Amino acid sequence: MQPLLQLTEIEKSFPGVKALKGASLAVYPGRVMALVGENGAGKSTMMKVLTGIYSRDAGSLRWLGNETTFSGPKASQEAGIGIIHQELNLIPQLSVAENIFLGREFVNRMGRIDWKRMYAEADALLKRLNLRFNSHKLVGDLSIGDQQMVEIAKVLSFKSQVIIMDEPTDALTDTETLSLFHVIKELKAQGCGIVYISHRMKEIFEICDDVTVFRDGQFIAERAVSDLTEESLIEMMVGRKLEDQYPHLEQAPGDVRLKVENLSGPGVHNVSFCLRKGEILGVSGLMGAGRTELMKVLYGALPRSEGKVWLGEREIVTRSPQDGLANGIVYISEDRKRDGLVLGMSVKENMSLTALRYFSHGAGNLKHAAEQLAVGDFIRLFNVKTPPWNSPLACYLAEINKKWRLRAV
Ligand SMILES: Nc1ncnc2c1ncn2[C@@H]1O[C@H](COP(=O)(O)OP(=O)(O)OP(=O)(O)O)[C@@H](O)[C@H]1O
Ligand SMILES: [Mg+2]
Image (cartoon, rainbow, N blue to C red; front, side, top):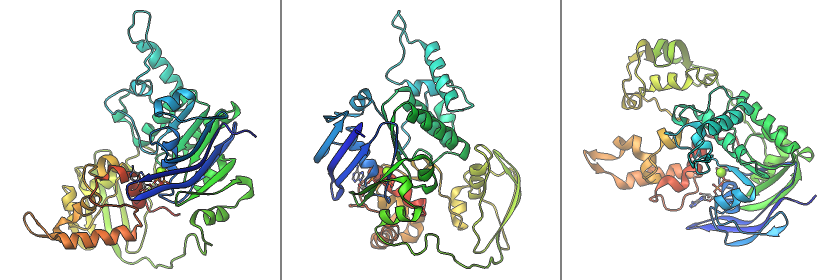
């Protein structure tokens, strides 16, 4: 089968990092190509080289049989390649419809924006994705999952021949994921080629036809998904035999460490639970059920209106995140870009920011050597591929995000 799109032997370097060294990828009509590899393998970079966000140092790009270079995302979009980026790229202050049609608003004969048509078309896209909100809603008022669905709606609106989805289900619930899969099947039936980047094995085996594996910026293999098992795929990704994917740890739950009684706050009503030493407690519920809010109240980022919390024998009141931290409660947010990181600061500064008290001699004086040492340890521990730690974080965001999510693979 002739591929719609073929990237061959792509090379791309950033200062201090060779992100792609001979990476290849083909996308076929009516098929879903999974692109997999460990964090930092070069998957997102490959997509950015393809769409012209980054220029390639070497290698070839063939689109519909012709050697091509896209000058930027607008050019690749117009040629028929749509992309849903790993990081959200929406404007929170604008409505859903305004975000979807940004820069290509419908205009009537008078030269004015045809709002009616824009909202109607946007609503039709939301309906196709089974979404319950309408397109007048401000994007900033939507949950992260719903914002991700808006990104998906946006890419659908372009009617592309190839659609790239870079970890689209990261923030989605199971129901939203099902709606997305339904749309992927529709797109396949229309002859669209899809690149599906994901770390979720179950999804790859469910929705993808073929898989391309990258390791350390290199092409490792292209296979039919039906010829693989989860284990053999992971082995190709990591480059060694897997003894035990989820090592079993025997752990007897100990004493109660955290007790929450009748806790209430914004979006949280009368919640009680206990957490024992050595225990991992899952908190589940639908989007909007108050899971995030519950954790924020516990941590002190949202005000508590009622209820009691004990850490061991000691009752605690957390009125601010500082109180949470001082009591040994840490919170890793779902939206790291907004709540978790300071993008203008370096990797080092972000890592030590909430723990400066361990590195200070008193007001304003930092023990730089100790800070450097601790940050270095964490960079090694989490295998963060970052050249100079003093560079602003924005470039390394995707990488750091993922490390904190502590993926299974
Ligand atoms: N703008 C940039 N400047 C410098 N280095 C970068 C930049 N973007 C990516 N890199 C580096 O290139 C390598 C490949 O990163 P990339 O984001 O493509 O990986 P990925 O396979 O998408 O990983 P993930 O699964 O975590 O999304 C990493 O070592 C990363 O730190
Ligand atoms: Mg990526």
